[in-house]
Image 1 (cartoon, rainbow, N blue to C red):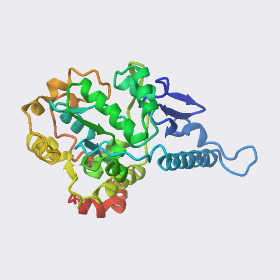
Image 2: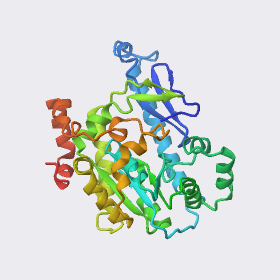
Image 3: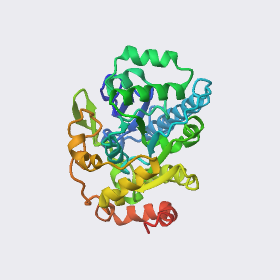
Length: 343
């Protein structure tokens, strides 16, 4: 994800990526660049704690402040201003690296559905320059929409409706992974919204999350991030997101799509999705590769989205995870993996 100026700031061995669309500075990788130096340090100048402990303490402090900021924002009057739209819009969410972008590309290929870039509007404070750039809208128009909106839900509806109309489509779709954590809010303001939860084997997700994103966009090019997260953190992230989603299983507005089934039976799964969203299945869905290859959207860059589907990433954990890492994953996630019938 891009920063405010589309750059990655690396200073003192800590990699910070400023995410303009959420308005907060989020730490995405800490210490790996300076680990060789730090591991030889014994004590700081006061001799009371190691350099590494001090760095981790600082990281925890920053994270706690970010979480507090999110909670305050979620409870603000503007975010919770009264607004209801009864239209059957489409919301997609799920753990990162589970196939949400693939589904978004499929839906965007439908003649009636406008599934634009991740806006994160349900999740974080709107960053207007980011939205204007990603959706190719004049910043002045986005600012007017924001100023005139009675609250967040009204702004989301107007912004995404404007985008859909520009694309010549009748239904807007918002895909951001974290939407799965915001369903109560979404259904309060969009009570007829159809939600699609994309789920993938947590072991494969953990493999993919470990080094994600491998590249960071800087202007119009990509640079490596060198991220290497502990597998324990990756599987915990998957458990958090998937658990938040499946508690809504009894709700008829909620449906689950397995990444593995979407790849293996794309036509059949897209028919299920269209039925759930109350839209007609169209043959254009089978032309996803052709349609999406013409899009300038920089989010859609992986071959699985713009090229033919393949199954090689299914079960990759068998080769990518060491025996010790597999044991860690099973200790933390065996129950949920069984509930989802991956075990």
